[in-house]
Image 1: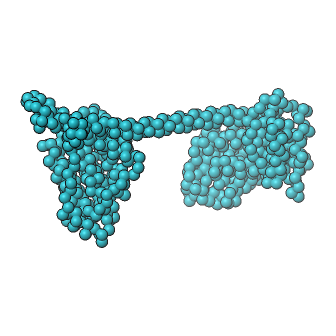
Image 2: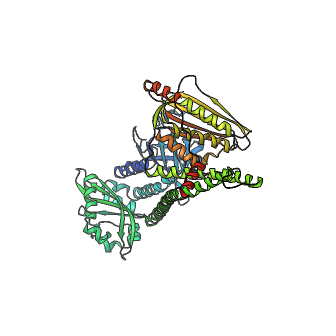
Image 3: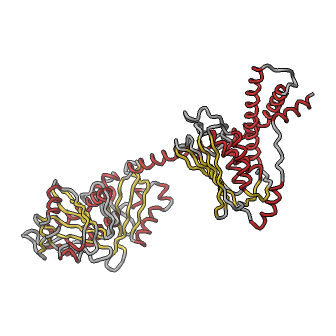
Length: 585
């Protein structure tokens, strides 16, 4: 209310007394305002009544500073507040304390955000609730909704208090707190509000209680609180426990099933408040009950939906576990059962190629060449399947030795260059100093082969495959970078799974089992390292392999030994097949 004019004690020819002058109702309104401030996380809350061109402060609560002075009157001159009264819309403001008028600067020191909500009765703004925060944290739409809901209680209290003042000003000091409370709550229909004596017997009853619980006042007065509870709750002592907590701590809040007169149940939110006299003695209790059955039904539906969704996830996880087990069984069966027949086929093809089984014409030789290549590919696939099956049964034993990682990388790159197509070029950059690692030469070579083969295979248009070997603190790091098809980011986690081939229109014709990268990473992890990948669709991929550096004090002798040692040649599928054929003969 910027630029408002304050007139202390002015009555404007209206009521002889303001609501704020009644100490009992003032205390009640301050309790309500404290609750409102808590509900919207505000530091300050003020209830004001609109009286023509004036605003009268009827109550105020401030968590850390002096509240607004009850009974103060302000002439409405600020355009923002005039719009609130005329258009009946909330006023949301961000304040700069330095720019406030002098009357407000002291009371609103430090306030950054305020919301003023009109409380409407019979189509007119009857009162306002203003809340404020000293933190730079604006109010949200749900705060406005909460203020409107809680404001209805305040406006009832304020309206009935005004009627009380107009009708019985001369006997204000003689009214008891019970009479004032009855006048306040009698017209509330959405809440059951009633009083009880210290033993829990009903002593007052409002229209809301009659509507919600079904009892008329003459039917329920004098009966015990336990009347409203299910038999099992009464047997468990829940009504007595609620009274005991409210009597000892001042308040008891709970939700639970309650019983109407007709025996039907509803889900209730209840608050029991202890009422004390000026000496601190317990005079009785006030209880507020709200029927929130519809809210509970919605919550229960949400919980049931979440439960069903969780069950679906568990079912899916079980299916995936069964599928993984089936894959493992298939790998074991296929790798063992196919190995011998494929070796025999490769052996006979070798005999045909060498002429041991007779002469073959030119067309036959061409066919034999294709069959031999396919046999080698099939044998490679069976080898990968067998390796995966072994790896899942027991951890693979590594034949570890101290090596210079540069030698292994150089040998593999040299070998792959010999088999790469004409459109591919392989580059290799290595440090001048040794890169000592403790590794299984054969298995690490297998990993490098798979990384390079993968880079070439998924660069169908050719181009450079760049290999960079680095020695970083604690690690030997090799990157293999291609400029091929690349992979979508959301598909990267599939690469290192068993059978994790990513099939697209571009890769559908590229052969692969989906086991190579899985084996490569698992083998690298057995060495204490890992393989990661970065990729972009259409721009290529970069695979990074890291394994721990070896202790250099133990590396040099072993490296010298490695440099002079010869790597035994592998046994080819054809040789295995010949041995099997010889055995059969």
